[in-house]
Structure formats: structure tokens, C-alpha cells
Image (cartoon, rainbow, N blue to C red):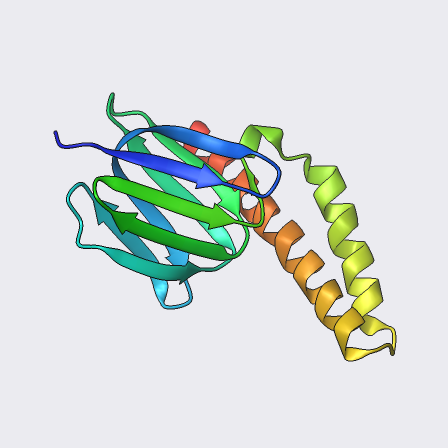
Length: 140
């Protein structure tokens, strides 16, 4: 099988780096799959789940927030605001963050504060969704 280098990078740290067979990233138009020798591309990614298959056949997932993906010269690089593996997600903590963000959205404040609350809500919601997806896959 042909492989390529996948890098998932966040502002805090490199999140993942390894050889992969395929990767699926979330975009505003839906999920987008990339295989080895893909044509060069650059695209925006949205909050969601990245799924990749490593060279040994292991499938991994992580929750990501918005960013971009680029594919060129045997490498796929994902630059995102945050990335986290499902096992690192604390469900209770994320539920609390969602509730706090929802309360903030209901307050009559500036547009900027409202948008910040929306982003916090979306991030927590996405992490919970990925955690639940991972739990469903594990219970199969």
C-alpha cells in the first residue's frame, strides 16, 4: 500500500506525525478523503472528526477545530486550532463548557462575545460527539 506522511499540528504542539494510507477531514462541504499521491490541494476544515488509517491498518480518530489542510509531495498537513484524541476528552467537563457557553449566548452582549460563546459551544459539542462516536466504535 502506498503511504504518505500525515502531520496534525496545533498552535500548542505537534499533535500527530506518522505514515498513513488515508485520511478523512471535515470541510464545510462535507467529509473529504485523501489517499497517497493525491493531487496538490489546500482547503479549509471545519470543526469535526479526522479519521486516518495508518500503514499497519490501525484506524485513529481525533476531534479538531477549524483550520486548514494541505496535500502536496507525499505529505498531508493539517493545521488546526485544537486536536484531541477521544480518550483525552472529559465528558463532564465538556458538558459544563457547553452549558456555560449556552448561558453566555443568551446574555445580551456584544456581537464579538456572542460569537466567542458560539465557538466555545461548538468546540465542546464537537468533542462530545467524537467521544460518543469513539465509544460506539469500541463497543462493536
